[in-house]
Length: 154
Image (cartoon, rainbow, N blue to C red; front, side):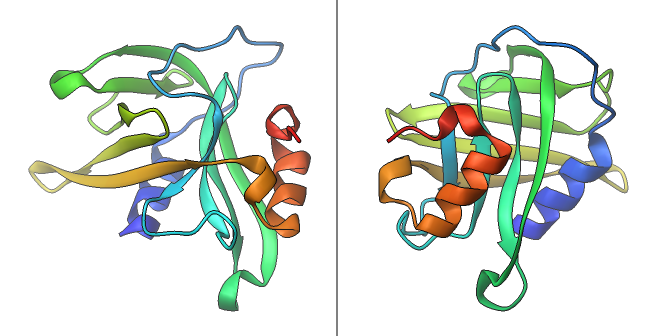
């Protein structure tokens, strides 16, 4: 299912505007977020919120042996959504699909992706945890330094 979210994210996101962007208000803290079934010390995929961008950061291939790769997009707008979620908009896109986030606890969130499918919207929920940079593997720390350096805090 996680792959479906990444495919939907890639399909729904548009180009990046030039220039610096002001910080975006989300109900979660900036950081590296991953599925709550993962261990932060060994994780090789997740999401990054760096204060202005959201997207996937991951190693791919057998056992996460290739990469890293990042699909980070500037968040251009946020707004309240049903059930306590905050909806993120990327570029000028504001169609049927959506990306939403809701804080559950300090370092826990629920990420919801809604993707159009035939005559309905299919929703996928991912319970997420935020990983402390210091406990992540050197490999993931290097990926964060490369793609989201503001999050590389010792």
